[in-house]
Structure formats: C-alpha cells, structure tokens
Amino acid sequence: MNLDFLSAGGYDAGMTFGGTFEGSVNLPLHRKTAMRRDVPVAVELPESLRVPLCVDGKRSAKCVVAPGDVVAAGEPLGEFSGGGYLVAPVSGIVGEIVRTEICVGRGCFEVDAVEMHDLHYPTSSAEPSPEPESESRTSEELFELLSRAGLFVRGERITELGRWMSHIRKSKATRLVVSLLEDEPYASSRHAVAAHFGKWVALGARAIAKACGLDTIEILVDASELSAYDELAAEAGMSHIAVEVKFPIATKRLLKQFAGRGSAILDGIVACQAGQSLCGELTCRGSVVTVAGENQNSPRVILVPDGMALRDIVADAAGPMIAGGAMRGQLARETAVTSAGLELLLSMDPPRNVSMEACMSCGWCRDHCPAKLNVSLLNDCFELGRIEVAQHHGVEQCLDCGACSYVCPSRLALRARMSELIEAVRRLRSAIGRDEQ
Image (cartoon, rainbow, N blue to C red):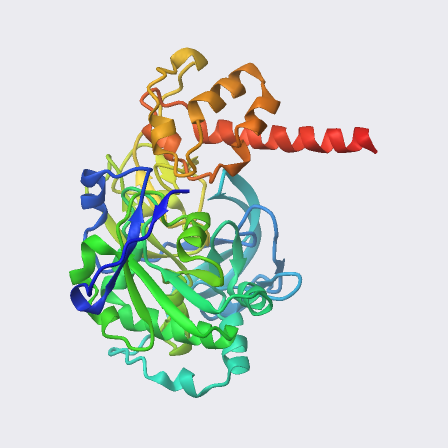
C-alpha cells in the first residue's frame, strides 16, 4: 500500500487534513454526480415486503413469528444462532415464509424470507432532538439496547451490530473510526447522512464507543465537501479528519491501513441509525441507498426497508439493474430484494461480454491497483492456469475492490478472475499440505 500521510493546519469547520491516497480511481464527473446534496427520505411503501432471513448469503436467522402475527417496526422476525435479531423493517402483518433473492458481496443468493403486508411506518416526533440521555446509561445498558436494535455492520462481511461490538470488546482496539467516505463512483449515501444527520451520527458514535470501551472517536469525511458538514463538525468529543478520496479508499481493508492499529472501523450510516434508534427516531430498519446510473433520470438518496423489490425502487428507469455499484456490483434479477448489504442501486447496462483475447496490455489495471499488484500479469496467469506463478506474485493481497475491472477498457472481469485465482491458490496449498502429511 502507498498511503502517504501529510500534516497541515486547520481546515474549514474545524476539521483537520488526514492524508492522501495514491492509486485507484479518480473520476471527477462521477464524483460530481455522487455529491448531490439530497436528503435521505423514506420511500412509499409497497403492498408487501419479502424480508430476507439471511443477509450475507451464509448465515440464516431462525424465524420466530407465525403467519397472522402483527409486528411493529423493530420487533424480532428471526433470531441468529449465538444471539442477535433480524427485526421487522416497518410495522405490518406477517405472511408466509417465501423464497427470494439478495445481492451481496460476490454474488446473488436465493434465501428464505418473511413476507409482510398491510405495511406502515411508525410515527416519529416532528422535531428530533437527540439529547444525551444515552450518555447517562452504563456501557452495559447501551450494549444491550444497541444489540437489540436490529442493525448490521457492513465491512469485509455483514454482521449484527451486537456481534460486532462483542468482537471489538475482546480486541485491542482503543478508538472508534467512523467512515463517511464513499467507496464507489455514483455513491452519495454517506455524504447525505453526514450533511443532514450529523447529530445522529455523533450520538450513535459516542454510544457505540462507550458500549465497546473505546477511548477516542475519529470521523472520516470527504475533503472536497467540508462545507456541507457544519452540523457534524460542531459536535464535540471527537476528531474530524478530512480525506482526499479516490476509489476504493473506503473499503474496509484499506481503511484499516489508513487508520492504523488499534482502530475499530464503523460505517457512518450505522452510527446514524444507532443514534436514531436510541432516541426512538429510527422509523425504518433498512438501507440508505443511492439510486443512480446512466439510465436513471432522477438520481437520489432514499431510505429503503429491507425486503423491498429492487424493481420497485427504480420503477422510473427501464433496463438492467446493478446492485452494489459499478466496481463491485452484481447484475440483479427482477425478483431480487433489498437487504442489509445494499447501499447503491444503478440503472445502467452491465459490461459487455468479451473474449479472453481482448486484453490490450494497456496497464491501466496495474496502474490503478491500490495493492500495487501486476494485474495484467495475474490475468495472464488466470488464462494460462499458472497458479504457482500467481501465488508468487501476491494475488492473495488482492483487496477485492474492483478497481481493475472498472478501469479496464476491454471490460474484462478482472475482479472475478482474481477471486478465482485466490481460491485456486488456496486449494493448491491445501493439496500440498495433505501430501506432506
């Protein structure tokens, strides 16, 4: 990694300059689109939701409701083994267990879901006033309240907030680093939350830090948009660090490198929702989603309940849907629904299929790789089946950020190829280990 930290004086709104990120993608036109200052608003509810009992394609919650049950927003629909709940995103009546599809990480998965109908949002106070009532609570009280909030932390994997806090408590972390940086072109969800709900972000961050026993709080924001963060900057008790953003700086593994040892990395949207939950202002459990793309005439940031059909969200734009972003997203089917891992939904045509001979040897993939891998050489290893050579050239250092695929003029599926190479290297290592035994 080439992370060049610089020191400088004060920044606007009392923020300090954090550093620069060398490599990867800097696309001003896309970032200009991403930085629209839209207020995240809740969507009009559909007739029904299909709330997934699995949010990561792996672990599923056990359903704890029955058809006909009336549930309020935030009440449990399912319970995960080892603790943690999957809760109703809004109020409504429980229907049958059905099958649906979610798009997370590297693929789309068919999972069980709880159908809900007769939906409505709970009422919220007209003037939210996040008073520090939570600051009078003990760390154990905050831990219990936040663990039952039905929130999920999105990083290298998706996990319940309570489970994440338990892990942080056992770790050597001493500070909470809250990221409000975007990690994809077109994305503006974190920017909108930082610009319009700074008090909720700060309240949630303080509560989570106290629950986890962390001493300090640092908030990472985009250096190009400091004037939008006045409310957040006014919050005391935390450091605000402005960062020059190039994609994919906000991916979890790069943030760990940026923040250094002893840091617990948390998405700013989760901090915001935690603050709202503690004050009874979280009217919808779901995702803050950026709706954008080349075929989208009205890009916007909206709060979407879990289990809503993706097609309903982009009903004003025909054509394919990319769930998860231009760099790491998946082509979504018409039946796919929202889940905790979704934060960007694009209406745009996916990359065209090309043959293996399409590589132009331009070197853009290598130049933009934040891990400084020779992606062009590794692509040759993929095509020629040279697994040991790929291992020697560090393919396992791949961050799975998608920058190589995004900049490739031939539209090669380089991210997927690197993933397949990594799996092949691991299978080879396991086979060698068995032979040695």
